[in-house]
Length: 159
Image (cartoon, one colour):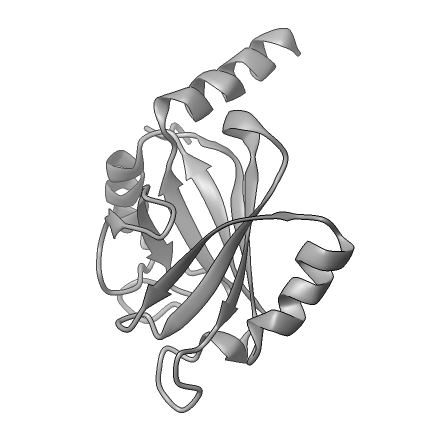
């Protein structure tokens, strides 16, 4: 099966709870991750600290998330491992091809995400029209910037 895109690697993991201070106590204070920035979105009902592991274009984000309002949706805190993000070399081609194959995406299409990259999400549940899904896991597809694509190409060439 020939794909018009490639999954390059892990871009991020997002971990959610009702209190991101508790998450930060583990991930920042004990594990030593660097807190890079904060992202708040009323639309997505999220207040998150964007932390990082590693350096340069192969850095992986660890997003520590809490809801702005625990009674509203989306309820980010209801799934402790909220989502996994994957670097994609050509996001528009990937979405077009995967949709044609029956993969269900969440509403909202491709848009600018918290990390300032174009993103979209694979729905955790399929339906009759789109039977393929994340099988219970929300998956974020992230357009890899040129420096990330080059870093993965360099690693592949050296292997």
